Amino acid sequence: MNLLKLFEPAQKPYPKDIRGLTSLRFFAALAVVIFHYIMESKTIMITFLGRFYLGVDFFFILSGFILAHSYISSLEEERFSFRNFCIKRFARIYPTHLLTLILSASTTATTILLFRVGFDHGDSFSCFILSLLMMNAWGLNKYTCFNNPSWSISAEWIAYMLFPLLAGWVVKRGPLITITLSYVTIITLSIFFESINKPFFELTTHGFIRILPEFTMGIGFYLLGRKYSFTCARQLFHLLLWALAIAFVMNVPNVVIVLMYGLLILIVADLSRQNKKGALEKKILVFWGEASYSLYMVHFILIDILFIPVMMRAMDGSKVFDTTLYITGTISFILTFFASYYIYVYFEKPWRSWICKKFVKETSQRINQ
Image 1 (cartoon, rainbow, N blue to C red):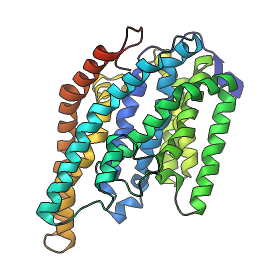
Image 2 (image 1 turned 90 degrees about the vertical axis):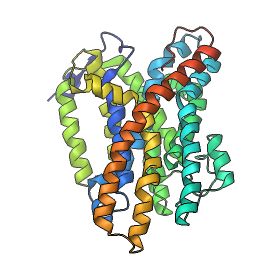
Image 3 (image 1 turned 45 degrees about the vertical axis):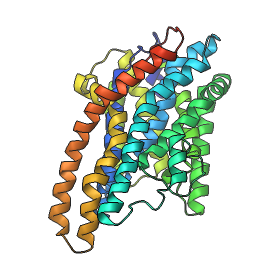
Image 4 (image 1 turned 30 degrees about the horizontal axis):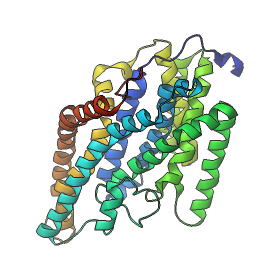
């Protein structure tokens, strides 16, 4: 096959709403949720499911891609409002972050009172303040705390603040140089942190190190896709899905999977541009993609409330471990979807809309970006 025939100059821009990528957000969030439910099982963790935490890295790359899609034209045309950008990003993440932080702190206090244990030795007042300020992935605390997944929101916030600088740098360097340098940085950091027994793809309290090259690579992939289109996007999509599945099962290095994530985002975005609709365009998947942030942020609290107390009691011999644990885990997993649905519909969306309408000055860009 002639590789040059895989690409052609893009004939039209991406649609405003790239629905396929929205659906992929759901699968990335679901992967992280599954990982947190099975991470205490050593038997399951040695399977490919034990690498589902890499869903976070997918989010980081996708975030760079989507923000570039939404804002890079305004940056190039010098009509970008950093104030409006910050307010929109704050409205997107902070209300649900604050709600789940309060719920998590309440859960921690309750479990200490009822079970006489604290499930996170990182939980402290100082860490609560860092989480409140979205600074819990800046290397200022030793452990993750309270709603553990919120470290990635702190990392995202750093990337948001640096977005104009990073995007400007990417535009000057071009997509291929950006992707190459970002990927080399990821490989170098992975080797370094592995050498000091702190795997790069498990960085949480220092999550800002993990996000920046991936986020920048996402911007690079957007600029590449803006210029070029695939001539056989659907075939490449199916091929890449199989390749990803094999990579997980065969324990292919994480740095390879991360690059495949970028290619997957590029291909799915191109399918939307070519109006080649598939399963990822289904309304139910798009909805859960939109609700994926609530799903991601609330699931660990349900684990705390229903799952961990039972597991702790099972481990000390007071309960039968397997049956009780699996039944409770299943109930908790199902309730996670109910909770995330209601939080998204009745809390996240209304608060985001209110903050944007109240504080964002008139702009042509959408408030739900």
